Length: 583
Image (cartoon, rainbow, N blue to C red; front, side, top):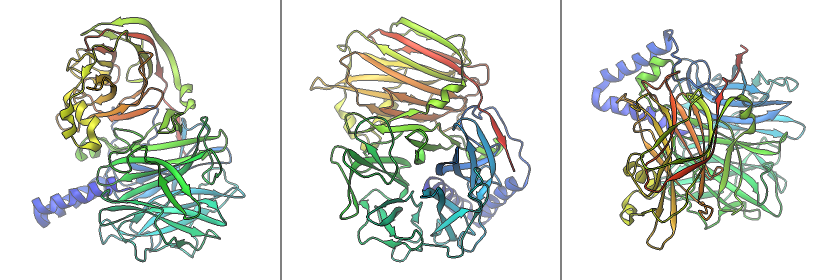
């Protein structure tokens, strides 16, 4: 269980304690207990059609994804009693294609003294001989907040069952307890890897404001010993949750098994940062002698570093798919609606579309792209080719079920001369949120030179509501160009209660060919956007009041002085993924 939700829960409790006093706290708990006991009719209007989510209740972090006996397994944090965080168990779903899912009973639930207050996030490792093992964080006591944490393992009761429906907790649990570590910040064990005669894994932690990934080694996968030095740490970053460590090939798009070594291999370390509620990764080298990770100095190691996603995306976990030789990334998007609205609709949280991940040819960043299996849901196709869009023009993409769609478009332009000057005063914005801050002041309706141009997704008939995803191109005083991708939820809903941020991230792209590409996955209350083949990705959660069900439109717009051309646009209505349950 990563700390975004725990922190939110604690903050709500503390706010209630400070404002309401003990009576208010009791009312808060009584309200929660009431909503968990009473039957809640699940509202469907914002539920997704092809993203993974259970029939009802709260979910968060994807945990332990793996491939086993022909099935993809995804576990995730789940509250079986309601639509807010609490009572956390490991939900479990399986699939042949990561698109259509079978929901099973929870795999792991609190049942022992070492996990009686929750079974939080962790990972799966498939040992030689096709033997899966799950590591997870158990909560021994709710104090100190957010809980006293230990590490627990579970194994299948029946290895011949491809669904792995039953898991057991051996008697030698918990296999790892904090000693000198922070007992309330010691969680989320990673997938293990093997080298130099030892299995190894890392656990996220913090010491004061320093984020830490502790390394542990084992010869037998039972007894684990902490390494003398942290695997990696960084001051002033706060708690490192849901760490992930894996190798990537220097060339090509194939993924690598987590234990892979050799020439032409680089490494990725990702952490979910509790303080900022964003994820950051670095690319670096693995020092096998010292057993430490050393990031390259090509990107920042900290809050201003690279992100998988510059929007609503957290607690991600990757795994190696041996059947297709891919590294696949899962991420979670929480709701942007209020807690009361979540309770009213009876559910909260979705798992985002799994993404294939590989190293950009530059070696300086990762590329991400929706798994190809998603394309099996594509239905009717709509095309636009060589359509010029001048300043102030809006072109509707007709013949599409725009509330549930996959849109892939390439824009071209004839000149960079009209690109607006990059404002150097923006350096005063928070460094780690620079793109978001600029998108906030230079939105879709603020006219520019080259841009803003892009898509108006989830738009109502008269544009009272819409979620624009767009590019802006800037030129610096050194005559270099910066490309910014924005996904702006500000005009997405007439409901004033929603959290409607304007997310943004810069796109590292060569503009010599004078073109930019964008793919957006639109699914009722989520828009996942991939710029330039997955160089920059932004996810937004939105809840229109008018632009719902069949009352949804899709447009291409341009509010820049430079005309842009829709060189090629392919858009598909998307079928609803199949889901079944076995309990």
